[in-house]
Amino acid sequence: MLDVNSSYAYVLWCRDFAATSVVATGGDDEAVGFVSGYRRPESPNTLFVWQVAVDQAQRGRGIAGRMLDSLWDRLADTGVNRLETTVSPDNEASIALFTALARRRGLRITRSELFTPSDFPDSHMAEDLYTIGE
Image (cartoon, rainbow, N blue to C red):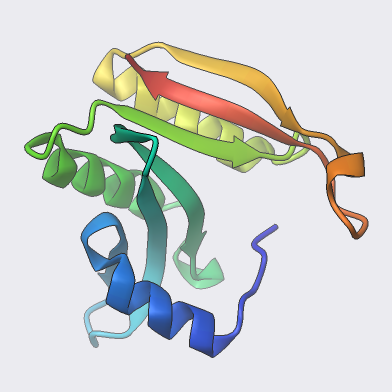
């Protein structure tokens, strides 16, 4: 499930992280999906993908995978050779999305524990870290 943020957070994200994010638009130039990410300050060769979202009516058309491929290709020239993301264990769609990305690119994908429910102040599920690439 996508954590919804305030419109203010999304406007700031667009200003500060446009180079590491993607918006997909339909034929009418309406947004139908987005990927938001950032380069990890401690590891500038690593793109951390924070959110992937596709409009419900557009799902199943490969939009999320194409956005991730486009973003990876765009950042490859800047030295990015690894992608990280967190996924809750019950999010089969996201696990499949990132597993397919690794397969398409012939890269290794690993999963490790990152955050447990007790790490969050609310009733958030665990978040496993998925790493693709070197």
